Structures are given as structure tokens and as C-alpha cells.
Picture 1 (cartoon, helix red, strand yellow):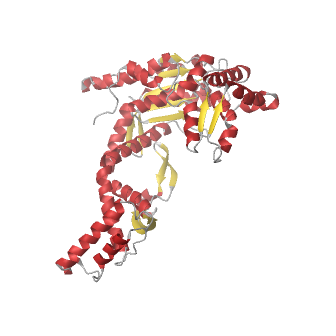
Picture 2: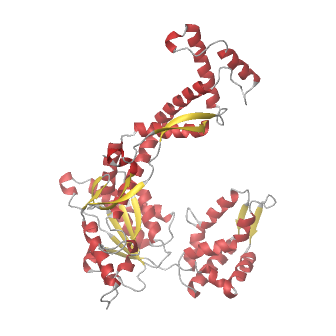
Picture 3: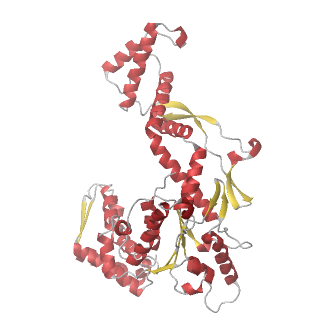
Length: 475
């Protein structure tokens, strides 16, 4: 089974990350090398491949500087199964919370959905054809012989009426050649109307498989699992069943497409490939790991649970086998990226075993005024571009001058210095306050364009920064 890790050099991987993340070169280089090492490992002889383990990474840096975004974009570049979890959600056995193995089970589920989506795209043309054929049969059965012709030209209506007039519905084995010819002409005519979208608003009855009625949380040898009620033994969950739905032709087309895709996709094969992909290319991002670190000099109380979480993480990060509902999954070659602000605790406050299993340590820098100016302009998904697209959906053109962008960056940087430093997330707050009135009025037809100058930005934001309103920025 071929892996989907792209054949990119570390320099090319960093260039891809630069499209979305400003600065943080050290972190980008570290994850680029880790991704490239996966490709290098696949080129080794099979007998040597298992000996090469990933070098897990610990990112240290304040909030809002791009730790999560780097890991998320890395997974997208590699088209790899990716999950983000927070260390504070986990607990050791005996305390309230989720067990650490649940993140591996969640990764397996994400890998299954990823592979299913890829398989669907591969078979979509064939599944679409099957779905169209079924839809055509439904329309043939649903339409009266004297078709009403609603929404059609008089010529089309007359042609349809002439096509079916005088013939009843006889079994095909009893049809004469003339009746067969008429039926084929009728089918071709309905197919043409279907292709032209003339029948999209008509209703048909569709037989489809009903989705599972729900999930139960059950204790298994692998920990807490979610089990679909349809999978319970002895038919206790009712099992999958066929139901008849009334839907428009437009809706029925998608229902039938999904139904045909389910039939065509080899589910056991999907699960095998998903487990393989999760094992070989999966990425688990563990955020807020500093919150389970034991501060220097601590001794008891909640710290017992914190150390327990770290110790439960050890076998997962080092490499073990976790039982999932899709099959056993080995974690030896999953790339783990841990991150934390470490404002109070220090990386050295993690237990030594965890530190040893996160050998690559990179520090992310705080964002300054120059970074904010670049974040507003350079990334592919820059905030300004996002707001322009959102307002364009309402027919409003948004224009912000270059000096106005500098003013926005300056306000965000100043607020981070005076209040709590929340990194680039401060820009989200400032932009929302700046565009609050515009976003509210945008659906109005008289509002076609809005231009922000530096003076306008300063005037609007100054009113928000004076007095008690300043606290609104702490979001």
C-alpha cells in the first residue's frame, strides 16, 4: 500500500508552511525534517525500516504564535491522519477524564474517514452513473403517462404526450417492439430533462439505508469505546434497515450517490489501509502539555494526577499497540508533537522519561509589530482576505489602505503589551471591533463599498480602547 507522504524536500516543506505561518523558522525547519525523514524511512529495506523511529518534537512558546497551525498545516501537506488533543483532557486511571489511549482510537477513526473520502473521489464517476440510472428508473415509475410538462416548452410537452399516449404499463416480457421503442424514447426524453435540471424540484420516493440510531459508551479491554447501536449482537440495535424517503430530485441524487458509494467501497479494505496510514503517517498534536507538568518543589495533591497523565503517555509515545474498533494500531511510528506555553512550569518540570521521548525542542518567538503587519498581508488565508470574501458574499467591497493596516497592527501590538499577550489572536479581536458595524449593515442594499483610511481606523478603535470598553479586548 503506497503512502501519501509527498516527495518534498525540507526546503519545499518550509516554503509551503510559509504560505500560512509568519516567522517561527526554527519550528518549521524541525517539522520539515521530521516529515522528510518519513519519506527517507520508506526508501530503506524492509528489514531496516522498523528500526528507524520518529524524533518527536516539543514546541515551547506563548499562545497565539502558530504552534497548532504549524502541526495542522504539516498534516495537510502530507495528507496524513491528524488529531489535536489537549493534555488537560486526559487523566490517569482512577481519576475523572479520558484515558490517553483514546487519542489513538480517535486517530484511527479520522484515518478511516480520510481513506473513505479518497475512495469516494476515486469511484465518484462510476457511482454517479449508477445513481443517475436509479434516479431515472424512479422518475419513470413516478411520472404519469400523460406527463404534465410543467416547466417545459409546449413542444417538449407535446412530444412527451405523444410518446406515452395509448400504452399501458405491461411487463417487459409482454411488450411489443413498438412498445419497447416508445418506452426507450420516453426514457431518453426523461433523461434529457433530468440532465437539464428541469426535474430538480419534482419529488420522488427513495429507498435508502437508515443511518445508525445512536451510540453507546461501553467499557472494553482497550478502554472507553463508542459502539453504534446497529452493531450490537442479536439484533438488539435493530441493525441497518432500508427506509423510504420522499425527497426532491436534487436531494435524491445525492442520497443515491452516497448509497451507491457505500456499496462499491470495500469497507474491510478501507479499515486495513486506514490503520496502516495511521501507523505510518499519523500525527498527534498534544497541546497544553505544560499544564500536566509538575512545578518545581511541588509534592502532592493534584500533582499526583498530573504525573500520572505523563506516565500514561509514556508507552503511547514510545510505542505500543492500542486496540481500536477498526483493529490493533501500533504507535511506534506515529509522529508526536507536544506544545505548551510553559509560563509557570518549565520543560524541565516534565518527568525525565517524557523529556527523553520528546528529544527535539524548539522555541517559538513572541510576535512583534513587524510580525503583525506581515500576518495581515502575507498569509494565503490572511484575515483581511477572509473579511473581503465574507463581505463580497453580501455584495460589499472592502478596501483598507496600507497605512490603515499598519494602524491595526499597531493597536494589536499595543494591546498585547498592555494587557495579556495572546499573540496573533489579538488581531481577530481588533478586526471584529473595527468591522462590527460594517458586518452588521452589510446585507443592506445601499451599502456597496466601504473604504478604511488610517484616520478612520484610529477613530473607531480609539473609542473602543477608552474606559471600561478596553476590557472587551481580553477574549
